[in-house]
Image (cartoon, rainbow, N blue to C red; front, side):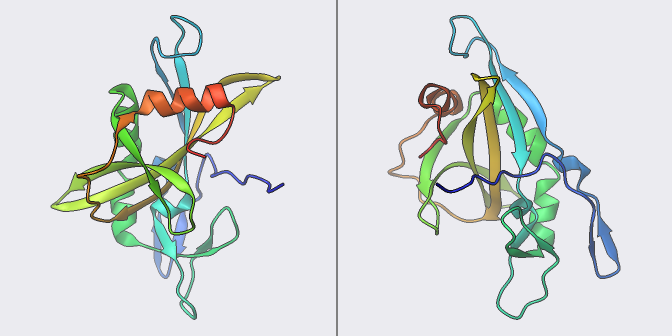
Length: 181
């Protein structure tokens, strides 16, 4: 069985050449959605964690890399992603609190992930994420929302079926498994 390697809850500053990039804005955080928990009237708890993919891209063969991601894959710093990531925690918190609509999309690696789209300066940004159940002492206590990637990408949305974030988070709790699977 494959070991699940999760995104870190904090990121150290990244030095690229003579420049240092602070990543404290990507510190993990918790937020709750009132009344959406499994038990009637209970809250749905989220812990949000950000992958290094929100400020880097996969290094091309022979290209200088600036970091290894949480899977040990070489990554190259991406200034556009970094700038966009500055507002990402606020955006994710707002999306959770408003129970925003999201949809499933297949990644290049064949995994299913969830997508939120964001517009910034005329560019469409794709925020890619999934949920894992949080188990404490044998009891599922909430979901871990892993922000897997952030990149500019136009997605044709005319045939996508959307559901609220709470639908997928609750599915994760009931199935006790990564969502989407």
